[in-house]
Each structure stands twice: as structure tokens, then as C-alpha cells.
Length: 144
Image (cartoon, rainbow, N blue to C red; front, top):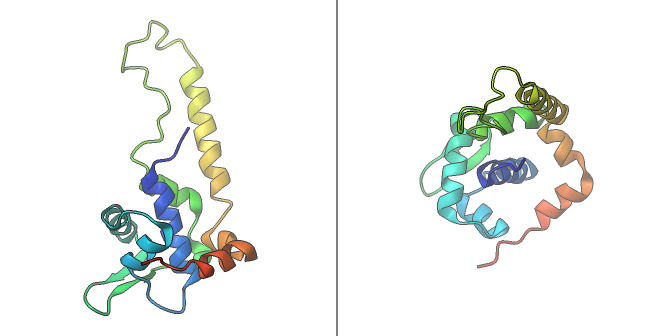
């Protein structure tokens, strides 16, 4: 299983905003720091704001901050909010002659649930609490 870039960048944006909790961060700043397309990040930030993870302010002195405390942002919930589908197999895409008798889909669904449950053991605060990561984010210097 591979998470989409939307989810990857979404978690990175939350980490960046969380590491800079003392101020608003901008799309441009994050785009330059991570060397990611500004337009792609715009979609990511929009979705994070819709989900209630970011508070955004438009305009010249705008930017974004976390809308929740890092301790309350569970990584599994972020993944579920950002991923369009975590369905790993689709028995109906090409009708399978085993459909209805096969237990593979149930096993995979169970594993997917365990994956999300395990991710929910971690919060944004846990990720940022790793001193090396927090320091590295603060060291990121956006290149012009």
C-alpha cells in the first residue's frame, strides 16, 4: 500500500505548522522549504482546513496555524481524512469467480483497520516530540 502525495504532503504541512507554532506560516514558505509545487500545496492546505486541522487567513499578512493542539491530531485520522480510498482490492472491478466465498477481502480490510488503529497511537505532538525532526524542520531554509 502506498499513501498518496496529498497525504504525504498533508502530514508534512501539519508538522511544519506545528514546529512553527509561535507564528503563522505561509504556503510559499512551505513550498520552498519542501521544494513542492505551490499549487499542489494549495489543494493540500485547503483540504486540511476543511478537515479542521488548519486555520487559514487570506491576504497580505495571512498564513496558517494549527487549528487544534498537536496532542489532539491523530495521524490515522489525518490519513483517513486525506486519502480518497484505502480500499486495497476491488472484487467488483473485474468480477471474481470467488466473490462471496473468498475471505481475502475481509483479511485485507482487517489489516487496513489495524494499520489505521496503529497510526492513531501517534499524534502530531508525538512526531514533533522527536527532537531531531523538530530541529530539522526549524532548520529548513526556503531557497529562493
